[in-house]
Length: 186
Length: 186
DNA sequence: TGGTACATGTACCACTTGGTACACGGAGGG
DNA sequence: CCCTCCGTGTACCAAGTGGTACATGTACCA
Image (cartoon, rainbow over the protein chains, first blue to last red):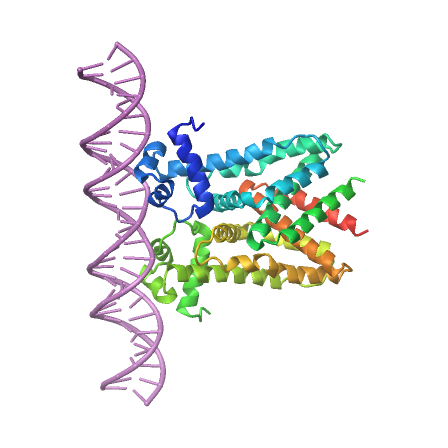
């Protein structure tokens, strides 16, 4: 166990740490102190602050993809949606999601090193979700539109949940959305 | 014209400027240079960097409320939704929306001075939108859930639009949502 | 006219920042 | 046994940071 690159170990620890503290005002030194190393090491392994940020973004994206990979086509879209939503609303994931939205916000403002997030942040999900819709009888076009809407609803309600903490309310809203969707299929 | 407080003028100019540059890595001095003044002035009027941030957040929130105030109860929920969406997707508003989401992300991470955004970011919209639903025959509970879902869809699709720039695709998704909603009423 | 309050600028402070120079140590290969 | 390479630490640097001290200008009121 732990048979990893020191760089790899540092990166994973850094992402976990930044999920807790945020990335906005953190300096190399603060982060290094949190990780029990020196800022010199971060520069050594990642070249610069921006180089580190690039790999942080890449890792956050990779974790999203890992979640995506678990989306197997078994089950109706309704079942898949409910299962996914239950997973996303696990409080253990809140820090990761906060970090995701923080980086999203910075990427929208063009912070160097974060640009890589934007091109894939929506489209990466569209492919698998569109397939799911098609495999349950939707046309390509309909499936694509529904996929996009599903991503938006999920993200919007997650933003709500992280801000308000009102799990009951967002669950009710997601139930409503799934009901609307299911009803439209009949 | 321009008969305003110098502080007020500075604040509005600062929000406009930060909407363009982002708030993340900006220093007092950079911002002051952009505004054609000295960082000393920002400290003088706002007390500190954090004091400035507090007022920035307050102003962004106030602008949201101003948009909200335009939401008059006339028209069906469908008409109101479409009109609102058309306004939100005006490219002239993109910078303000980017700033909004950036501050949202930082508030989620607990950046001092931004906390004020979170308690109201969802609930401020729930009241008026719930009234709208009720005035068109929904129960209190149903109207409230639909309002919450509507806010989430709008924010989620806005995030999509700002990241991808694909206005056609997000418009199609919003149309789909409104259609789903309207169909459920019959 | 004089004074008082607000607005602004200049110069400075201690501190932190990202990044670099350099030295050290240990592991593996010749 | 030495040499080279990787990982790490310490010490340092110039630049920029938020914040303060203090002087100055300008308007308005007595």
